Amino acid sequence: MYTLDDLLFLMARLRSPQGCPWDQLQTFSSIVPHTLEEVYEVIDALEREDWPHLKDELGDLLFQVVFYAQLADEAELFRFTDIIDQLVAKLIRRHPHVFPDGQLYTDQQQPSIDPAQVNQRWEMIKQQERGERQQHSVLDEVPQALPALNRAAKLQKRAANVGFDWADTEGVLDKIEEEIAELRQAIRGGRHSEVLDEAGDLLFAQVNLCRHLKLDPEQALRSTNRKFERRFRYVETQVNQQRGDFSTYSLEELDAFWNQAKQRETADEH
Image 1 (spheres, rainbow, N blue to C red):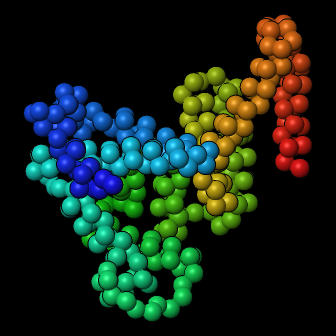
Image 2 (image 1 turned 90 degrees about the vertical axis):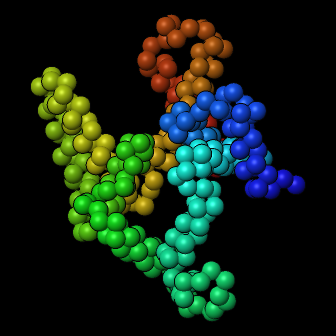
């Protein structure tokens, strides 16, 4: 079977003067869209539990990492081995309950520790690392390119780690109701900029609620997207099988098809 060394050789070959013209033209910035696409394809395969496809998509994602490493090597920034070395060192440092002496291959019996304690230690170590890099804010290093829902959750989590957070979900629910009232007022005022601002505040508060409920907002919305798609496709099927045109149906009739789709899903679950 081919190995990681074979993959690294292949990448270097693709970028060589005798390699692939497309690969030769690529830069760090030009392959970013492909990287994002591969990440979402991995997530899609995971959510569908399509394990053979997942293996293929993970390979495509790994190729993106190898591509960046090759570009960095050519620019004399770092090599693939440097990525591995830094990653292993960081994971050893962040798992002192597994590697108490900081050595990878030391065989030692460790006391049991629950996941909550692991997570708490992980965050403490990360904060120490940020301090050593002389950051100016706990919000530093939250990537600007993250999807907005994910970035909102990370910003809120960073703030919560230093005590800036609601005490419980009731406080967040109250905040959501407050934001809804402010959004209603902005809509009545008719100023687009105010409506945009208040709509964003409402979304931000809803992300906060998901975080307090231990839910991933991106995953929650993706689940709702799939549910909407499923039910709307059922509505389309009913329309096509009967009159064949949405314009001949009232909203009430279309909503009846929607409710049928919901009932079918409930019946399937039982």
